[in-house]
Image (cartoon, rainbow, N blue to C red; front, side):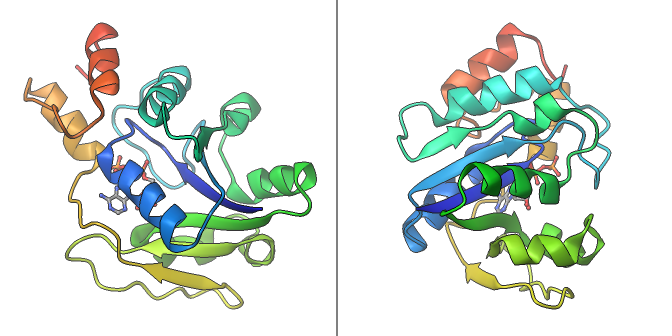
Length: 191
Ligand code: ATP
C-alpha cells in the first residue's frame, strides 16, 4: 500500500490542491491520498483562519467522488499546533506495512529542516515535492530526506488569493469546486 499524505491548512481547499494530489497519485502510483487539515498551522499565521471543522468539511466536499482521496481529521481532533511527525507516527502505527509519501510544496520543503523532530520525520516517509509555476526548484537542507520531484499542472491558485477575493466580494468560481464555493457562501466564510 502506497499512501500519500497531504498536509495543509486548506483555508480553504482549492483546485491547486486537488491537482497536486491527483498528479502525485498518478505519477507515483499511490493507492490513496489522505488530506490532513491542520488544527493550528505551526509555520504560518494567516490573518483569517476558518474554524477547523469548516476546513475539514470543505476538504470532504472537495474530494467527494474520488475513490483514491480521503480526509483525516486526526490533527484537528488532536488540537493545538499540528506537527507532521506526530501525524506520521500515528498513521504508521495504524498501518505498519504502508509506504508513506508526504506531499509538500517547495515553500514547505525549504523550511523542512525547521520542522519539529525533522531528522525523525525523514525516516518515516519520502517526500513528493511539487514546484509551483515560476518557482525555482527548492533545495532541501535536511540531511537524509528522500525527495522526489514532480512538475504537475501549473496552477497559480492559492488560499490567500481566494480569501482576498472573498473579502472584496470577487468571484471564486472555478478556483474551488462548486460544492466548496456554495459551502463558503452558505456559511459566510472569509467575509
Ligand atoms: P496560503 O495561500 O494560505 O498560504 P496555500 O494555497 O499555500 O495557502 P496550503 O493549505 O498551505 O495552501 O497548502 C498545502 C500545500 O499545498 C503546501 O505545501 C503548498 O505549498 C501546496 N500548494 C498550495 N497551492 C499550490 C499550487 N497552486 N501549486 C503547487 N502547490 C501548492
